[in-house]
Image (cartoon, rainbow, N blue to C red; front, side, top):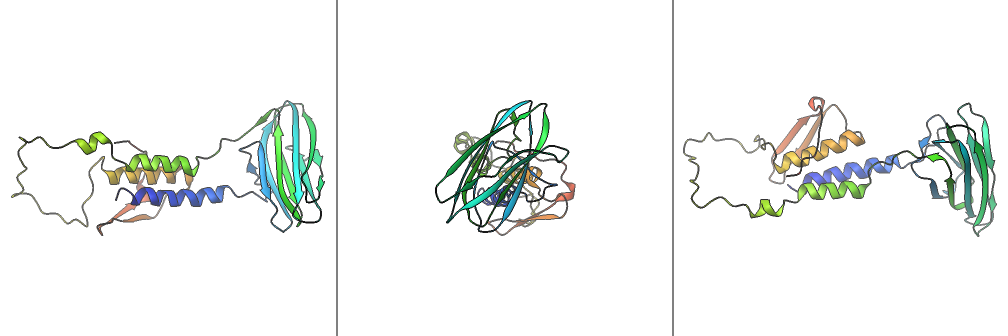
Amino acid sequence: MKLLLPITALLIVFTVIGTAAAQSSDRDNPTPLASNMIKGNGTGKKVEYYYSFNAGPGEIVVTVDLKAKSGSTGADVEIFDADGEKVFYLYPNAASTNERRVKKVSVTSKQQLILRLAFDTAAGEYAIKLAGPVELTAAAPTAEAVMSSADSAAAPSSAEEATQPAADTPAPDTSTATPTESSTAKPGKGSKFDLGLNLMQTVGTHFGLPTSGTLHIVMKDGTTQDIDLSKVKSANVKKQ
């Protein structure tokens, strides 16, 4: 049970991160720039990508590395201001060996800019680096960071494992206890299930877990748990 929920949470994270990493080809919905270096490889098709970032005032240095998979290739590197006016352009060409071009652009005030990259069918490896007064968007948590959090939540502490009931503690009287069905039993507050569930809900809060519907969980012992997502107000991870 300790491994089931963290693994499920990681599957959601990997799926969402894969989607978030996609480059936008929609000029009206550019990808927020989270790094000053954009690296990639041609897809064998004509493509164009759009990124948004804030920059200025000052001089921005644009460095482009490009090479072709075969023959020769060309690329478009353009920057537009908020009014759609082109304030920078660079159209490098390259053969099968890497070609580097460097060009600068001055920005008089802090403003949002749109970077457009376009590659043809022969494009191979490419890298575009921005230097200067460029603001980057904070990157989403990586899969490794979430995995570390999941491992910490799933692993019991040494103190917890070492804790044993005192020898003189009387055993509870179960003769009058009301029988319950294991299939409907709910774990107590602070249990491992509660911790794993909080992790799952926290991942959903940051990565788009639906806010309606039912989360159905099957335990290793065959019991099930259903959580109505529309009733979840907030979630957090509490270390035990």
